[in-house]
Length: 171
Image (cartoon, rainbow, N blue to C red; front, side, top):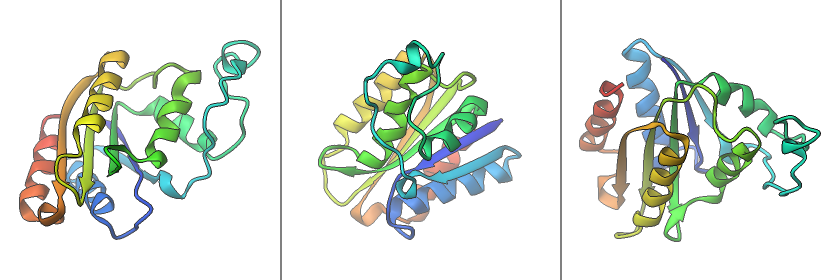
């Protein structure tokens, strides 16, 4: 399978980046083609709600930014993995931008499965992010292969690594 991981932590050695790398390593070991993109370091603007994409643009966004790199990757992906830190009870802004910019194509054409990797230093903050992720899965009619969350002392542990490997094994 062709897997695209959108990793949204600005911290290159943070827990979310570690989780995304663990997923990539396990998926490559299982024989999948994997592309991991750190969207936190991309210049992606928010949707302008201009409707160019649904008119003259024929599905293409009028904005010319780093999202142009992601559209073809998303179009080719069978599996989309969102890896994001939780900032103030929801998915961080860095992952929201590519999600919301998918508006122009409605959903990635080939994506059939998704997974969510999320980390936070606070307890009880995942509900909003998980609800949004599940709503996306439902709206796009894709299979939710699972969610792995890592809070504070769970981060970068063997237990979390095994949960991530279990997600990959569900593919």
